[in-house]
Image (cartoon, rainbow over all chains, first blue to last red; front, side, top):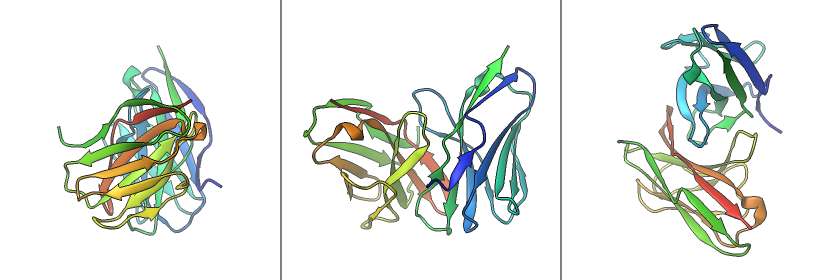
Length: 113
Length: 111
């Protein structure tokens, strides 16, 4: 079964509001997590990453929170813009090697004007 | 621009035909990957190459073969295409422990 999953397939927010996209993972051995944004017809685009020895990491308008106790990852997007409309995936890597990433199914973020 | 380049972007095959998907990266990354993405799904790992000269199976390797031609290039071959292999294929590269970069994908339809 899937190691990584998302709670909601679709999330609709008003332009200017903050968005929170959630992800649950099941493998406690995962040491590295990434959020990707995928626009229609394009490949995944890196947004932000976090290692398992951290709880929070901030980027430009984005914050990732990691709760290892409950195996939960979230992506917060501040002041959501129309250009943020896309499918967002969380991905995890187990073990620190080059074995590739395990992806969740994705959340489609829809921006309401 | 630096990155991962995939060819072709689109392909239609008949059942039983063979083809090779090409991938090249110019970031001097050691590791390369092939994923497939089906509608409404996340990406699933087909094969990966941790370094030049090595390849390993991922989650869904059946029906595929790969070749790490050199450090830059990693190809994916379908020997006898099946309709179940209709998907979008993404190549990626990385330099562990981080730095995964994806190509723009190859949309394959098998009829």
